[in-house]
Amino acid sequence: MENKRLVEKDPKLGRNELIVITGAGGFIAGNLVKYFLKKGFTRIRAVDKKPLREWYLRNAGVENLCLDVSQEANCHRVCEGAVEVYNLAADMGGMGFIERFRIECLRSILINTHMIEAACRAGARRYFFASSACAYNVLLQQDPNVRALKESDAYPAMAERGYGWEKLMSEMFCQEYWAERGLKTAIARFHNVYGPHGTWDGGREKAPAALCRKVIEAIDKQDLNITLWGDGHQTRSFMYIDDCVKGIDMIMHCDKLIATPINLGSDELVSINDLLSKVEKIAGVKLKRHYDLNAPRGVAGRNSDNTFIRQMLKWEPDTPLNKGLAATYQWIREQYRRRKEGKAVVE
Image (cartoon, rainbow, N blue to C red):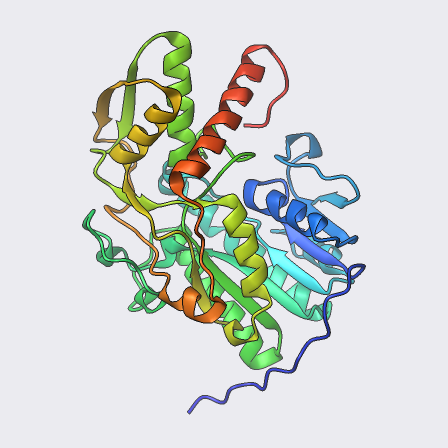
């Protein structure tokens, strides 16, 4: 029988204790930095390999480092003095990126192995790993009318090639660092996060942002046609960014969830066709649909079973898709306008 570690109670995280957040030039981690600033934390080290001008969100009063955390030495620099480490750094994007650049996705395991070792050596109390629903067995996702995926559905393992296997293996590192070395780890499996201040063009964007941009382009060019990847019947659930960062905080600080993978996603299932209909309604337009059956489309259906998160946290992501989409559409429309005027935007 496996011996389980005794969970010792942590002192409350002080407002001036160091929080490290990697991937902070990206969408989710950038919003996580903003979230902790709003909560009153004064020492945040934000890290990303992109030049600072390319970060989606840049927050005042934060130690911003431009370092590549796939390199071991940089990870030790990043984790120096950290009390909590949130590792959200990864080479990833929407389905177009994940399916075309599997090696780049797999190489993110270098980030995850070096970061958790550096956090452990630095004496960090807690370590968060951003996993993904792509870790789930793809054989359970072959029907658009898919049943919601519960945490145990990751095994027997048959994750998405590249990105999914990288996530699944890194989850195991988090579990073993707790079992062997006593580092309190947290593992959240994200389900399709969207919202303002995210990628909306260039190939890494996800479906909500891509459809918002395509509708905006169609209106601007007065060409009321749109091409969807796949047949439009694929189904997904989409979690608004505000729910995501709140969930990260709650999962990280729940002792009952140490080294335990948990879904972090909405359970509001929608087809890509219906997602487009929602964007069209926000925009006040109706487009003629064309379908590219040769484009990357991912699994046929994926939804989050939120039974476990409701049980453990008495909470779940609950921002309605219509509300989150409206905010996302307005933000992307403004970015599109600024770009057209020759102003700087982050895409």
